[in-house]
Length: 311
Image 1: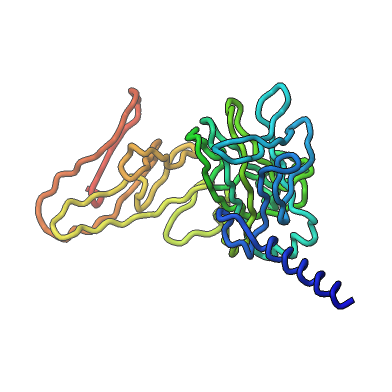
Image 2 (image 1 turned 135 degrees about the vertical axis):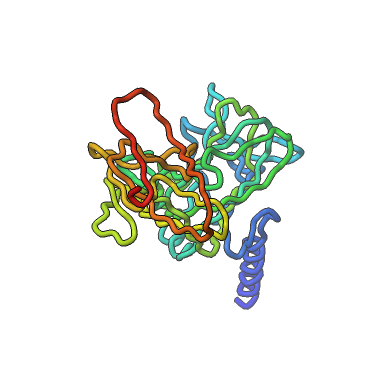
């Protein structure tokens, strides 16, 4: 009995040491799960918390030799390269392991031909609506929205990319994320894939919202816009420059509003003016010439008058 106990302890130590040994390309092994391709069933040499879905019409995995190493290549019979569906299982254990961390995806791959690799994953991002019935599925990494570019260097490459808002619930056709070589890519294979938990980093979101101006102080509202009512003061003896759209008082005809034009001074203009006034403070006495920039695109029967202090 004593000898059996010793043997069991030695086996346990051996298995533990193998589990902790991670490939050099895996960042922070203590906080990572990974899969290594090579000589083994379907071209998979080792799984450590990360798995591939079984073969299907979308991809059949097999070992191939590239760069003096056995790697895994997915193909669609009669159609070329296939998809790689990855799964972190079981889900409950993975969710506890992830906690409040973000996820980092690392790929070790054979860059055999030029093209690209699309990366899509399961997320909680409500803005992703590729599947209207499952918001958040098929999100692309923000740093690679169109996919990872492949240069065709015929060498092994390693790349890492953040997966913000990743929520692996197997909604990507039963997997948690998918790697998809672009059409036209003829030689791509994987040496390994890793998922690493990293400190949470907020993702910038751009939100568009229509607003209605209820009350203004120091500027005037119109429709969905607003403008500042300006007063203009001279700096020393420099010219006084006044923008039309910043008139101190402004009334336009027939519901017209100030317009925006990047070629206009200050980026805006006024038209169909019923009346307008500009208040200015002159610091340096002297004679001044008034210059006005205006456009009259067609002939009209209106009158145009100007005055200074009512004169």
